[in-house]
Amino acid sequence: MHRSLITALCAILVLAIVGSFSPAVAARYCLQGRHFGYPGNCEFATMHQCKAAAAGTASFCGVNPHYAFARRHPARQ
Image (cartoon, rainbow, N blue to C red):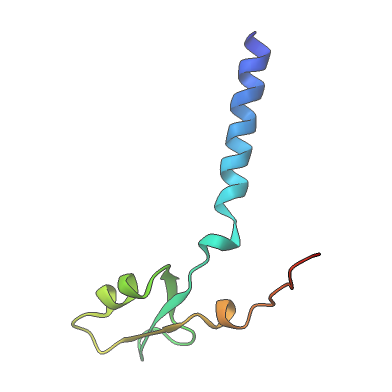
């Protein structure tokens, strides 16, 4: 019983870690401006988040080039 509990907890931990590296949560938007360089501060999942961070500054938001130009795999049949 003790081993199966530890095994289950380890499996959940591994799945949580692997799931956090999923490209589905990739940062799609970058805060850009002269203080950020290129491509900028790319930690925003939504345009709303990026615009909120840019509010009141001389910065703007753009699409993360790593996301925009990522290779898309065609649907497998």
